[in-house]
Image 1 (cartoon, rainbow, N blue to C red):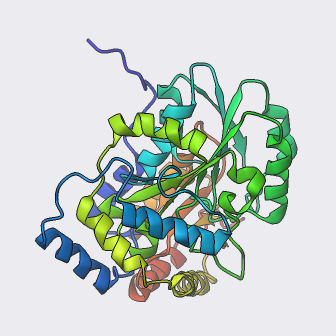
Image 2: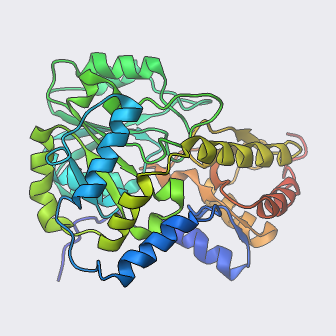
Length: 386
């Protein structure tokens, strides 16, 4: 009776791998979950505002104290001043913020450039709005952007470029050359940049996160999405935000009032009060860099090639030296035979490739990482002649 609007959509491979992990009592490095505890003070504030009755609808744009504290932080971090009344909206998570921005900006037949591997949620939002996703493959071994390829793919139909920085699943952080190229290619165009920056505070090895907000030429055409979920382990609260120039934000809010409207009221008040004092971003980055370094040392004797992340709490394992199985076949065998669940990189690609790569989440306690590495180090090369 219903003709599917997303006929190629399938159940998330993340959900499939999580179910397999439970079935086989495996260590789950596929799921995007951190073992870092939520700040006790923030949890107490949430309880306080629930108990005091802050449980009615919040304003569509978000509560004023939270909007103000966020724009103050952006000014401090990126030297960019947003109007708290007209240039920021609190959203029900980053996925909703991305989807609503796409709905507001993309019309039938317009094209959106995506850097692949990429979240399939972006693709679905583009297609639901009649847009056409155009894919740019990140180049191995470091997953860099080939800007000459980007230039060749741009045309009069290009309406949006989606940036994920730091990038999930590869953990790559954009450099100064990337920013300069993006400025050059979008100058004088009507292209909107949609930037997912939810891991902006989780950057390693003295790398610098370059927000679209920090570059005037890009800020004027960018909708920047971020969240405190990864930093404070509160992704389940469903609170993120988007900032951008008023001319774009006004269009976003036209859709927001019907797609999301009110967002977690007590959580907003708790975050607003907590953020007035907390500013421990460096400690968070150091914590995750320590987990990455520890896991990578544990994996040094394995048959996998680890491609170290420079941001996020994900990184890539290349198993090309181990097996010719597809990444889905190999990932499922790891669960069943070795008790470790990982995510095939094909979950982030629109069509099959021969790449032999897996994504793991290293935001786990040391004892979990130790046991996972022990099991992965036991995976032999199937063909001894390799």
